[in-house]
Length: 139
Image (cartoon, rainbow, N blue to C red):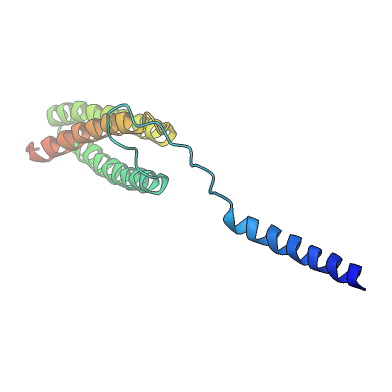
């Protein structure tokens, strides 16, 4: 009986020790991501996704605006139609470039994201300036 009590005691000590060891384990060190080349930290994945979605929405709105400009150009007189048509083609080219840069932005690695974002933002600003210039031109 004395032997069985010591075996039971030993089993309880081993069981308690194994449970306690699970709680004492030191946490695994997290792998550090290399910093972005621009010196800025890359945003978290959720922020990147939100930016890409907002950018896509803005491009979609500009696409609708450009389609309206195209319809306006088609409804104009011959000389105005030619001039406005050329401006619309330039806006469509700028839109295509911005869409390509957005696709690159969505596929960018963590390391290159800030650089690709800056490139996209520049392209988007150029497109917006073109749209504003078109609006200012009288028909």
